Length: 176
Image (cartoon, rainbow, N blue to C red; front, side):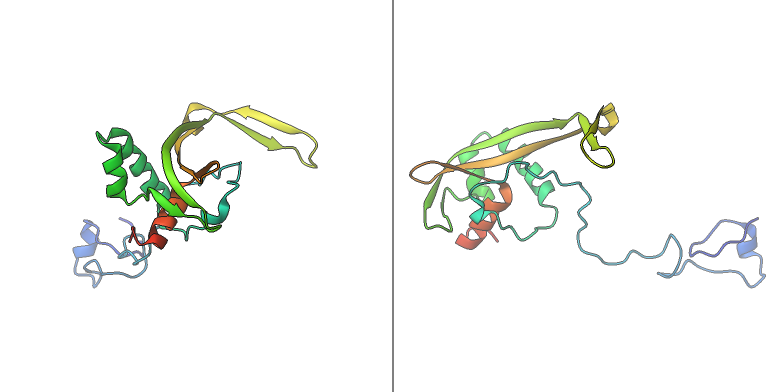
């Protein structure tokens, strides 16, 4: 027999004993079995930022879509499996032509994916000046894919990330 104060029924005899302690599970309240609170989507992944900033960051001002990294991963998976990649891009609302903030017209040439695995960690020693390197054990190795859309601006190539392309599509009215 145990006494504790949290909100859920136990199949213990003392809960049905007529001692005045009979109770049905409440809907909400304190305890680990309370009703879940209504919250927005949580971003639980650790984002991996591109160490080389995009020189054409004018289109890189996404507004923090919920779970964008998961949407991007699903896009990569679908794109790589698509029998007709051009139709897949249309279905996904990826613009083939987009106007850059500097007025240039960008035309989509290529979609690139890259597989990245982080297999080591570097930690600076106290006071700086030196560092410690450790290879990561298998359970700590992170694997991810990067996605880039390469546009041509008339003179050169402009690689854009998934968030920037979605924002450009939203501004052009091709994406909800």
